[in-house]
Image (cartoon, rainbow, N blue to C red; front, side, top):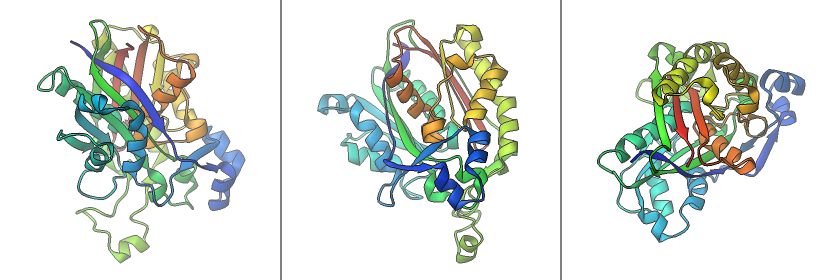
Length: 326
């Protein structure tokens, strides 16, 4: 039996960070931010809200009672900003949601993490965990690692989470194709350099900003425009689709301009593209599932719709999934 998305939900914190605040923190004008990114607002979580809280808040509506929780046999959390180095953030989410003694682990592929997790869940549910359901969550708190003086990054990122319940669907629905890719030669394009075994977070490293997020925006864009179309075409080919067959596309919300550029390169009309970047910014690993939930809330997906999910993330990584909505 095929594996597909059964339900979706999203969560964003209440605090709104608009472009006037970003302008105050950095040397970027509000006009520059809007023109370059298409982003108007983003959401920041408070100091008392960890990534596991974001993830649990997104997932809770999908698990309204004990019966729903008992069906979950697998929990995957995609994040690049975990609660702490260990244990996995998924274990904190498992405890918060009251899930049973099931596998719970994190996936780290930065902004592609959710699609990596979704493909892993499909494989496990098609094998050892056949007949069960998985909870796959993307959640990030990039506000905690921002250099607020760096206009190239602070103008982009916000906090949030998106959750999906994944499980068996009838023949003809669900995931028909997927493709994942990583390119270690691009590892320096997106990075937090200090805090691991390569460079411990010493006082000197902190003073030098090694614990802050850094990104080569132009390099990321060039990589995305080259490799994201490749994984999209691979996933569509597996599904037996031409690009024209796609009804709606949910891309990683790096920024509005990147989504528009990828749509144009791949040949997907802007009318078929989903956007949450204007109000939420780039929510990293949360972007695809959060945008999926927001799009479903605005114009619900209809049974039989052909949906494309695609992402680009640090590593560099890319992913694409072609599915039919059930």
